[in-house]
Length: 329
Image 1 (cartoon, one colour):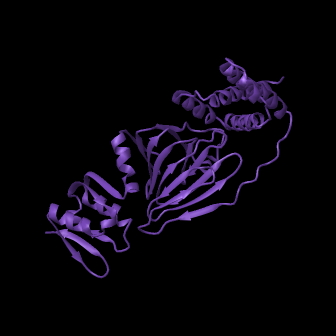
Image 2 (cartoon, one colour):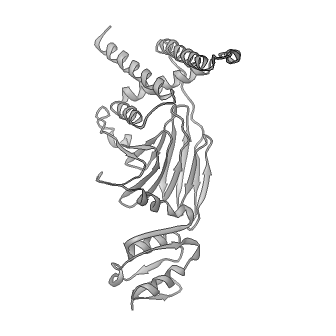
């Protein structure tokens, strides 16, 4: 066996071990991190893992008539162990045969496009059981294949509740970064400078987009792993600001309940957030833009926020047909 063949054999074996552990039902968060990190070390690792997943699916789909065994008194746990052993054995056999044969190419399903208008929030159910909540003025494109589930976040903000499917990771493309998950809940908001991500449940991996690494595909930067309770900001220079704070994560997705929450934030930033839901924009005069405020505001109440701000801050609200201007009182 040549050196390269020996290396590939070891990679295949590692991938197989990881897949068996993945389907054991006892995978820990640390082991999930290890698998994600190993897959992202090289294209060969990721390819071997994807192939092992497909082989497992093929093996576990083979007919096994063992239901009658469960009727044997006192043998239930033994039979469960036997059933798992049979699947693993079939997996190993199928894997051996698979590496000697060439599989058929998969066919991707047609792309689906979903979008919301300004002020609209919409829930979208996907064919895999995942749910996406699109915030105001948001657009996504979704494509599913046998190997992966992919979504392009074109603009706006969305909350993702991704169904677990280890055989098909869910990839969210944001332009310069790709977010890879298996099954988790998180919020992603695009901005002019990059995007914010807040993880409510599970683990996500943020990777370089393939196009960004096309010049040297063998060199793959380490992904950034974020666990539940983490919030991070990525900009075009790949800077990262992470906060391990569940309260911050809850605030980031408060829009799903019809509210926006602010904690000691600048007036211009608060108005910028509200303008995303408005066709008639609010303009903040520079003289009052740095005033700070905290509060929870209901999105459905429209201009009520202006009344609340006038009562709290030294400002005047001036309305015209074109826009609304906030100036110093």
